[in-house]
Length: 103
Image (cartoon, rainbow, N blue to C red; front, top):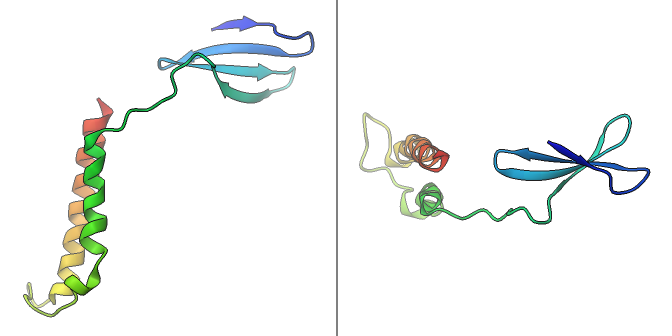
């Protein structure tokens, strides 16, 4: 952490945290503003793994496709167990995407 005085009444502190730089404006009592450094790279690259998160939306977006009674599973109509299967599938997909993007 290094500090830089830019104006007589304001004090600025440059903080490097997890490979990102932030410029903090500090007064005597508290931090007043957090601004990204002008030279720091703030763009985040999209990953193809994030596209998996669209699947639950597409699977449940059109209820006319799954609003029927058959095939039943353990006495439950297709409409109910299909949606419940997507709850489990969406949770699994979110876990997979989380672990792949965490690296």
